[in-house]
Image (cartoon, rainbow, N blue to C red; front, side, top):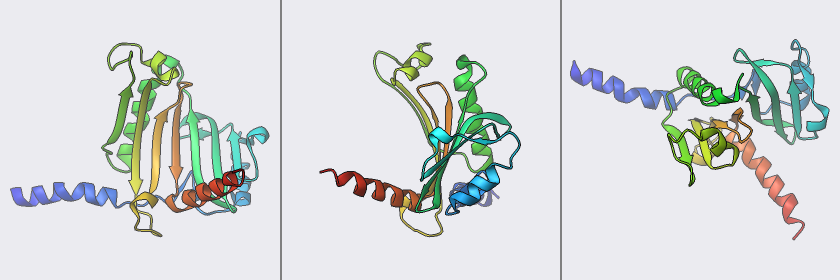
Length: 199
């Protein structure tokens, strides 16, 4: 009986880690800008933020995400293919930022798997437990982040896994980002090629 229990417990992380992540907010990675824009704009209260949208990005406001008001939501594209979805959520009080981050981390752990890629780093003169975490975060002297990796059905490469990242921003908001590992490589390569033309 002990052997069976041990084998089951050992299998849980493997099963969890083998899960797939194929999109964000109901949109599959690789879908077009037009399809995202059309579907988002029929959601109650949702509107396009023109000044933050471009040929490769769509930004929206006025929607909820996981039961919380989203400050904004951004969709990134490469060659008209959706590769990254991100949402920014603000706490009711800035002093509740760690609580909000921890709550969302717990919800992601519950839905997908309990990640071990959890980081809380401080730079001198700040340190864990000193009570100045808000100031440290604002100054870029403290980092709170968590990561979940998922099998990418189109690649066996470790660095092309699909992912979710959860972070506290210097403005004391929580950022959640969903990303396709292959398409983001394509986007980065295109950006590098464009920038390198200046040399």
